[in-house]
Every structure is written in C-alpha cells, then in structure tokens.
Length: 141
Image 1 (tube, rainbow, N blue to C red):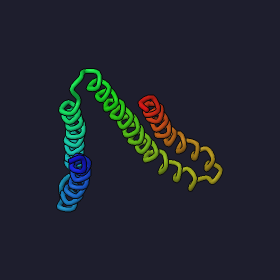
Image 2 (cartoon, rainbow, N blue to C red; image 1 turned 135 degrees about the horizontal axis):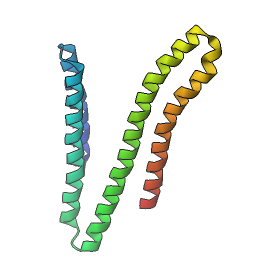
Image 3 (cartoon, one colour; image 1 turned 180 degrees about the horizontal axis):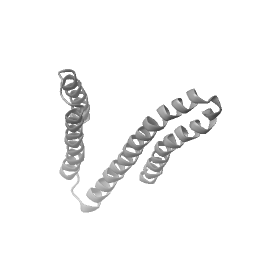
C-alpha cells in the first residue's frame, strides 16, 4: 500500500510533463502549458499532503503520537518547499544572468570574472535553500 502512495506523485509528474510537451508541440501556447504544470503540481501536493495525514490518523490512536507524526510530516513538507522554491528562484536568476554574462564576455573578455560572480550569486540562492532544508531535517531526526 505504501508503494502506491510513493508511485502516485511520480505518475502525476511524468504525466504532466508529457501532456505539457504534447500540448506545446501541437501548437498550444507555452503559458497554457505552464498553467497545466502548475495545476498538476497542486494536485500532487494535495495528494502528498492529504494521504499521509489520513494514513497516520488511521494508525495512531493516541493524540501525542498523531501530533508527533503530523509535526514530522509538516517538517518534511517545509524542507521540500524551502528546497523547491529556492531552486526555482536560483534557476530563474541563472537563466537571466548567464546569457547576459555570455554577451558581456563576447564583447570584452575582461568581463568574464565579473559576470561569473553574478551567475554564482544566483546559484547561491539554491544552496541557501538546501542548507535551510538540511537544518529542518536535522531537527526532525
């Protein structure tokens, strides 16, 4: 039964990527495909959020065990959100900084070091998010 709970998010994720790719290839706007991806993410989030709570409520009978299980689950969700959002932000930052760095380097090769710093700053955001999630996970254990 636990395998099904692990397989559902993977199936949702793969299906949403395939459907969005097919929609873009058939001429659908990229904005609509993005909204399809976000809707799929929300569905996966709800399934991952509600199923473990229902399973833990069915298994645990005393209130302390239920509260501890729910707290651990919220900690895992918090760590996932910290990592996910920081990686999305870092990806957006690098997506804008890297082409500008390449353009600046192609005009003048002396700008390579300066432009590399700006690209690395974008990656730092993702590393900070990962560090926060490691700190959250260390408190749970």
